[in-house]
Amino acid sequence: MTQLVFPPDFLWGVATSAHQVEGGNVASDWWDWERAAGTAVREPSGNAVEHYERYASDLALIASLGLNTYRFGIEWARVEPAEGAFDADALAHYKDVVRKAHANKLTPMVTLNHFTLPRWVAAEGGWCSPRTAALFERYVRRVVAELGDDVGWYCTINEPTTVATGGYVGGWGFPPNVRDVSRWKQAIAGLIDGHKRARTAIKEIRPAAKAGLAVFSIERAGNAGGKAINDYCNRWNEDVYLEAADEDDFIGVQTYARDVVTLPRIASPLTRAALAVRPLQNIVVPRVLGLKDPLRGERAYRMTQMGWEYRPESIAFTVRRIASIYPDKDLVVTEHGVATLNDPDRVEFIARGLAALHDVIAEGIKLRGYVHWSLMDNFEWSTGYDANFGLVAVDRATQKRTARPSAYFLGEIARTGRLDPEAIPIGPRS
Ligand code: BGC
Image (cartoon, rainbow, N blue to C red; front, side):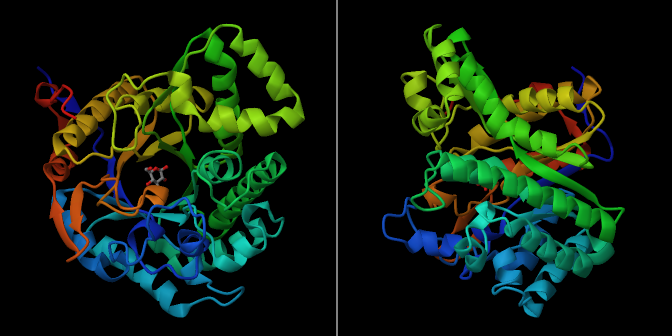
């Protein structure tokens, strides 16, 4: 059988985010939230996987696998731990990460904000504060000017919906103790303003660099009764941000699973009516967005450690959906991965996801790269260290890294630009 061949200039990478891997992010809002009374976080991030110290060997490891791209985060709370006080050491650190990425022949892709905020920004109301977008822009200008020509790819904000919906109306619980529809809408507006300002700043300072939003997206399915909920989630979790990406150079697509909403047909008009009446949103929105499993009934699907459906091909569904909105825009898969301790499941996830993406490319969709989440096991937010998304295992007692077979599997595809469909392992193992 013929092999699946990927374009020669395809980006093949792995992703991390600053707070999840660096450790000691002491000036951030998440550092406080992890320790707050009543926190929903299972355990504090602590020293994480010490990537702030171990980045040089981590970068060499990525390169040794055969990959050509590293997506990583710059932490605003480190760069500007107090208002207007930019930390020269932190800036020098990130410059060195970029320098070492190039030394390892890796294309650096920088994420400027990945969920966390400096404590002082959060204290002013975070993304709900009308000042935050301008403050973010100032930080972005500083970072982009500092990194100069060495960075060609910027993700402005990672998954704004996870912060806005997850934080203000969903089940994530962060920011702490806030469930408020008006604040939710304010946060959405703040994040969109922040993204647009960041994009403008990047294009002004470094016109050749590509700027894009990294968008949460999920495959939505179900029956007619679930349609109103699916439409609502598409609108408020995805489309508001996709609209804000109209002038982006690329869109980062991040997909992990599928949500299926199956309800009696009568539910759809009732949901639509409820969502149209503003006061009811306080009740309906959290139910709609926070109670996925009860809506689905019993978990009769192959499941990951996160309780999400194991469905690698969802990434092709979301790439196609976004390409149908923006047929001419470059798309990059900036996250796709699976939480499992059973590494053959990860190998299969990568293979099936990439086979589905190969079809997408064959259809003419401008998919420019695949960046896997994640390089290594790390701090999975509220879940703490109990989720294993890594191609590389980390023993947190010794900080020893051990590449799993899936790391070599993806590296081999990256090195050759080819995937043998007959070698795709299929079948439930979890
Ligand atoms: C986030 C990552 C997270 C991953 C797995 C994405 O939504 O960007 O920070 O670790 O999903 O949950």
